[in-house]
Image 1 (cartoon, rainbow, N blue to C red):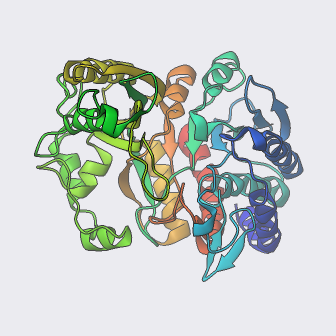
Image 2 (cartoon, helix red, strand yellow; image 1 turned 180 degrees about the horizontal axis):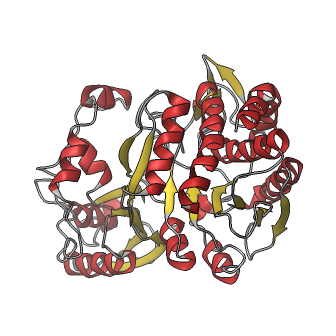
Length: 458
C-alpha cells in the first residue's frame, strides 16, 4: 500500500490535469445536442481506465453507453469489488449564474469549480486514479475490480438495470462501492446507511381547447392555473404531513437508537438555514431537520407552468396548467404505488370542468443498510487513516436507484462513501469540489481497497 500511496502523491499534478480534461467535456445526458459529447466522455473515460491498467470497453445501450473496466489479477480466491459511478452531468443552466463557465474548470480558494466536479466525474475519476496508483505504483491490486460507469444517471438510468441483469455473471462481486455523495462536514467523513427513493410525475389539467380572453370567458370557464393550485394545496396538512390517503401505510419506522444517533450529530441548523438563504426550516412536525432530510418521505412541487409569463400584461385565461411533482420515499415505500395514490387523490379533488392527466416520469426504490459488520468497519479504518477523523454514519436525502438493484441482482452489499462537501452546489450553478478532498479521497480509496480485501477475504 505504501508504494500505491507514494505513486498517488507523486503524480497528483497529472491527476488534477486529467480531471480538468474530463470536466471540459459537456456530457449532458438530458440534451440531445450533447449526445456526441456524452459519447466523447465515455470514450475518454475508457481510455483513462486502459491507461490505468484495466481492460476497458464501451458497451452500447439504447441510450448513452456504459463503460466497463476490469482487472482480475488478484486471483480467483481474492474478493471482487464492483465500483460504480456516472460520467454524465446535469444541464448547466442558468449559465448567467455561474462565476466561471461551467465546462471550463477553474480553481478558486482551494475549490475546483465546474459542472460534474462533485457529481460525479470528480469522484469517479478518484477511483480510476486510486486503481492506477495500485497497478502502476505497487504492480497489482489486493482485490479484483470491475468498474461500471454509466452515462444516464442524471436522466434516471433507464438502460443500466437491463445492462446489469444481462451482464450479471460478469459483474459478480463481493461488494459494491459507490462514491456519489457528500461527507457530513469538512474534515468529517461519513458512511451512508440510507438513501431515499423517488417517484416523479407530471400533472396536467385542461379546461378548454385553447387559451381564452379572460374578460370574455373568465367566470364561466374554469381557470386551470387556479384549479391546479387548489389541488396542490391539498397534498399537505397544516403540520407538514403529506395528506394523501394511504401514503404512510408502507413507511417503516426507524428505531430510537438511529434517531438518537442522528440527533447527536454536530449539525448546526442556523448554519444550514443561512447557507441556503432560507428564513426558516419548516417541515413535518415532530422530526428534526436531519430526520426530515434522511428518514422521512417528502412531496415537492418541482415546477409550475401556466398562462402568460412574459413582460407586461396579457389578459388570458389559459387552457392548461402543468406541475412537476416529486416524492422522496423511505423504506418500504414503492414508487409505483405512490404514483397511483397521487392520481387517486388528485382525481378526488379535481374541480368540475377540469380534465386531469398524469404521466410517470421516473422513479426508484429507497435503500437502507445495516451499518455493522466488516464492510463498514473496513471503510471506517480507511477513512480515519486518510482524514484523521472517525467517520460518522449518515443518511442521504437524494436518490441513487441502482443501489438497491445492484444488491438485488448481484446479491452483494453496497458501500456508499462520498467525498463532496455540503453546499457544493450539485445540480446548481457554481458546482465545486475541494482540491483537498480530491487528494485525500484518492488516498482513502487506496486504503479502502486494501482494507476491503482483508475484510472480505476473512
